[in-house]
Image (cartoon, rainbow, N blue to C red; front, side):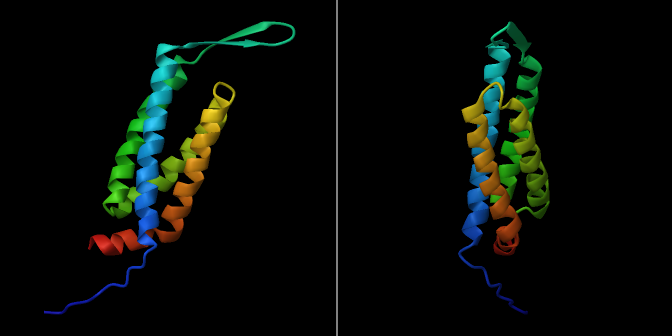
Length: 135
């Protein structure tokens, strides 16, 4: 029987941090999506006219995306390698979709983008250590 120890640093906490932040970002998207579905009429006043937008479709997209992001965050937290790859893709997509949402709710979108940047850093730089610890 061969015992092989793996060197895992304290940086693995960054990956767990990323997983928890993904869960939070997923919840943010779920809340934002539900809000858009329930309050689907947005009015924007300009100097010359009043613009009306129906944001319920974006609300449904954010709702589904939030659920998937939340599930990937849970999988990342338990060290699943596939979840790390999926998470990086989802977090990048989430940041890009928040840019489209920024006109409707700018402060909320900026907060979610900031969380996404922290998650990307943790996953890309320290993601392999969570896999090693899970083994």
